[in-house]
Image (cartoon, rainbow, N blue to C red; front, side, top):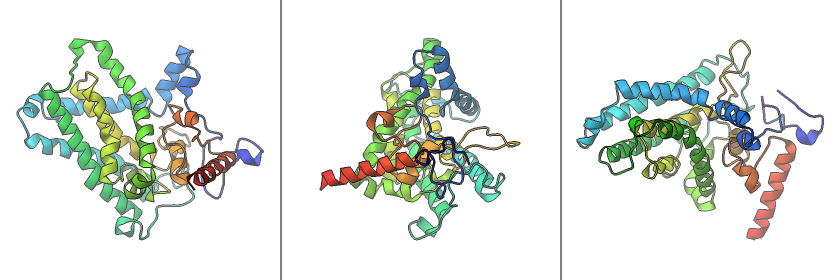
Length: 335
């Protein structure tokens, strides 16, 4: 556990956290150094959507695309077995990645509780489907979110095959082909912040988003544990390809990353630990704070939209106090 200042207002609540990064946490590193191209490049490379992680994932998706994905010719012929093929690929990816993280951290306890954020473990209770957090999360991830992911993916690949959405290939221009992979995360950040704020509107939260927020302490299966309506809204990030010229690889990579990434950011651990180190980084304390306190950190730590809107929580006691005062004032205004 890390403390950074003797001032108790800058310390964290030790009764909540088993482990935490240095506080106050920082956001928007790319934008803090926007005039320094070297720091911007470093920020993009090592941020939560860093190219070193995305590059590995892109390599995996490209390999699958070249080997076991249905061809665009098959997709263009109409609705058929290729849909089942894509569903099977997505199911295998989710079971391997999300299930693998759960087995590593919570079944076999490979690193015990080292680098685990919350003092609590996975929960049971009536609020969960089947009375069990893990079972609840697996059900909604596999029965709902996996299906919606596949529907979006198949729909957009079919539209591309029919020339309904704007197309791009390597031969059309390598610069845009590569640049789109780098630009997508910025769209993701803006989209996530906006739809997340909408999901916290009272009616939306009560009827849809509250299912996801059953998870105060999160695990890998919590990431995509969503009501079908929320899943459709969350994965609507793919709609950008109705506007931007894209290749099918962009589409598959984009929605697959968006569907599988939450398993890492919700894993509940800062990182995998090898020989006492912290690599690769997985869990996002920024979002962990959101699950703990609900009314803060709606976006992500790469793009400082919460800073601009006054909803940023930096992990300190002072930030918790400020957030509660803000919510108290908002309740008075509503009255």
